[in-house]
Image (cartoon, rainbow, N blue to C red; front, side, top):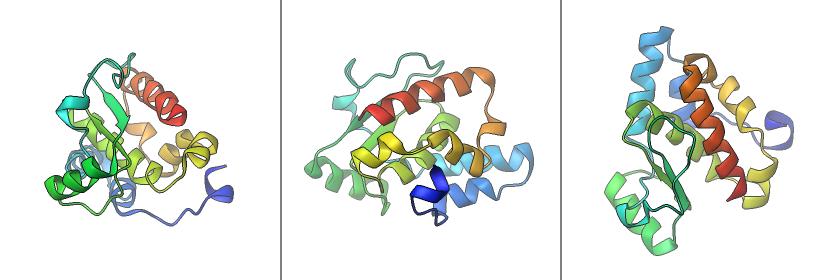
Length: 147
């Protein structure tokens, strides 16, 4: 469903992670990707936005256009920021950056139909996630599809 129903042009953050060589290269690429994550403002890191089931804390939510404008200034990124997230883990922030780079290009209806698991596989991310991180990302994907 990922490639056939939705445009699959390589996105910059995902492409940098997908093209990384080896475990060390992928880890470095994910840590660099973490710097591109649209950060959920601290005031929105509440129980409502908390994603249970992750080893590292994760918050994921929608932001208003006012928050989006200030977030773009803070993160110096051109990523549309209708969805934002935060985790203290750099690796998880990197995975979140790849996911939100794509998710923010889709409508809510398209996000519900999009196969984010396939997207992670296509961008070589799943093979670099430990089982506990993969379980947490599954919880994030469930929340992402519900937003």
